[in-house]
Amino acid sequence: MIRKFVAGVVACLSFGAVHAATDYPSGYTKCAQNTGATCSFSGTRSVALGKAGSFVYGTFTNSVACASSNFPSNSFAASAWCSYGATTSTSSSSVASSKASSSSVSSSKSSSSSSKASSSSASAAWTSSDRWGTWSNGGYTLYNNVWGAGYGPQTISANSYSKWTVWSNQPATGGIKSYPNVTRYIGKKISALNSLSSSFNVSTPSGTAAWESTYDIWDVDNKYEIMLWMNYTGKPDGSGNVKPIAAKYDASGKAVPEYTNVSVGGSTWNVFKGSNGSNAVFSFLRTSNTNSATVDAKAILDWIKNKGWMGDVTMGNFQYGFEITSSPGGMNFIVNSYSVSFN
Image (tube, rainbow, N blue to C red; front, side, top):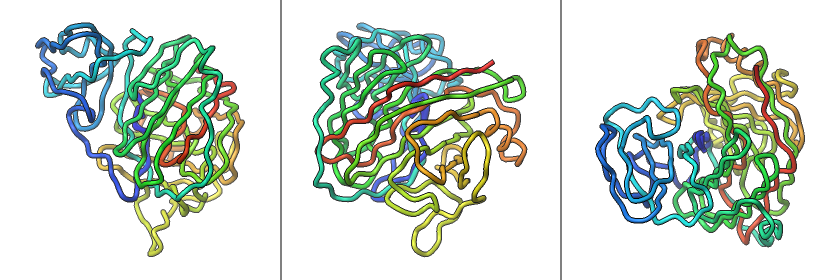
């Protein structure tokens, strides 16, 4: 979604197109390595630091020293690269983090439905149609995060981190196009967390499309990605037009779960385990769709750790958003309320 950290990274594979890991995002120009060398450009630009498809982002004017310390929390070595995008016109000047999502499997259908961009953008505190647009508010960062190949137009509008809308017009072709999301950084080991929970209330579109509303939760080293699919156009058994990454697929192409009907964290899930080639992916597909819930993420992390799938890792970016493969004609995805709390 990957951080799809954004910051995250989101975790869906896509039939027809797989996001290739590179040392710079699509459309960006490589300019300097992570050694303190100067990355020079004209005007105000979005600048990415990263390697192998994982990136953090900042917004700078004319130049920046390519050094990890000038970007959000990261562990990139000197072999990472800085690269700059097109001149930005977004209203954000804050430094933000982002990562290309590549961890769920999806296919798309044709659509005869369409919707118009939400009129709320006219009065929003922040609006961006920049594919890498970011905005920091109240300890959270919002990302437009249009990262996939063959993407269409997308606009994100927000009054706060807890109230925002995405209008997205993605073609009915294979491959994830975007993961607009809200991110909060955790920075604690699982054992040091007394609690970690999140609540959301959203409105999602009807009509033929391919998408998930999903949490994307990462450790600080981006070795482990935990996806919590709350509402999605596929099916909980691992079939349909969006599918989770899994270690096995049956003859029909259905993802095979490791566990079924697991009750943990306030919901019942089918659980899938696999890898996108860069990191392990654990996908929890809620057995019934919902647009409103509270999730006990600490209980889910403990469950994964107790299975021996990961150790007592330090948790990094905690994201929620919409992983969109297709939304032909334009559809609205609306966050009515959202929060993350931990101690």
